[in-house]
Length: 70
Image 1 (spheres, one colour):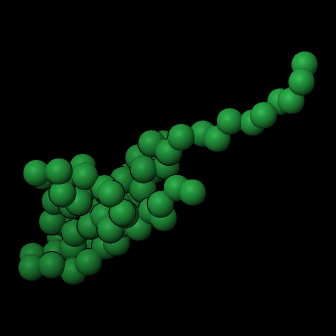
Image 2 (image 1 turned 90 degrees about the horizontal axis):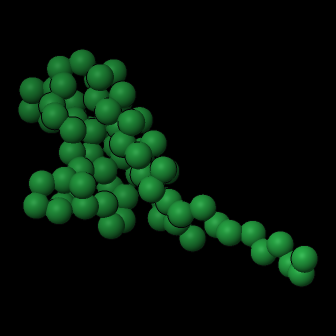
């Protein structure tokens, strides 16, 4: 089963930041969790979070279907 994708928008000093809490996410600096830049407008941070969630969903392998005997 694929890990649950969890990208949250949290208030930080100077605005809001999207932070990935998905298990095994290593897209951030030094192979750590991904973090967006700090945005003054919360909606912009939410857009970054949405884009990163979509990125995770595209990285998941598509399960194969056993077609059985031909």
